[in-house]
Amino acid sequence: MTKPELVYLKDDGIIPNSPYPVVIYRQVCTDKGSEAAQWLEERFATHLWTNAWRNGVYPFHHYHSTSHEVLGIYSGQARLQLGGEKGQMVEVTTGDVLIIPAGTGHKKLEASADFGVVGAYPEGRDWDLLKGEKGDRPKADENIRAVPLPAKDPVRGGEGISFWATK
Image 1 (spheres, one colour):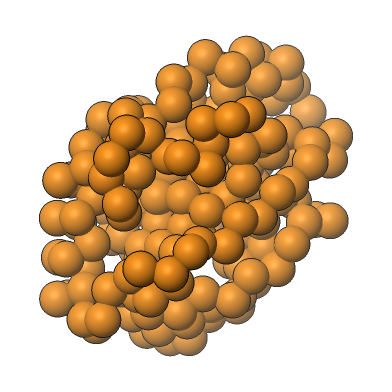
Image 2 (image 1 turned 60 degrees about the vertical axis):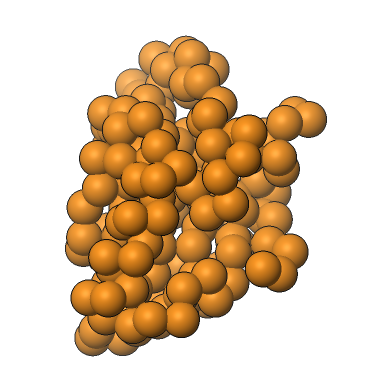
């Protein structure tokens, strides 16, 4: 497995983002379609990331203050924006996996018609949906600080997400 890409983002005043980077693993899975979706769900569950769903990514900036999230691309490709309006654009395609820390904004800018995602949460945590609206903070900031680090990396397993251990 190749070394993942790390995307560091800063609080933009609307989207809190996280001091932990978004971790992007490229081409983790070589299957496509429903076989890839099943493989991703099983891989994530093996590493204690559950409460899985299949769909896409919302076409508006949003973040979760109560959980980290993993997104595994099982079909198609998309251009996503991480971190809010001034954030970073990333291209994702079938087989890619993104680990998004709590508080980090993400949005689908454009996608192929067959774009499909498996999402899951560490230890099956419940998640909320915040859009950076007035009044979301400071409660969202408190929630984010209270989210524990995952026990395992959803792709590699092991002891937590090594890229988050030193922050």
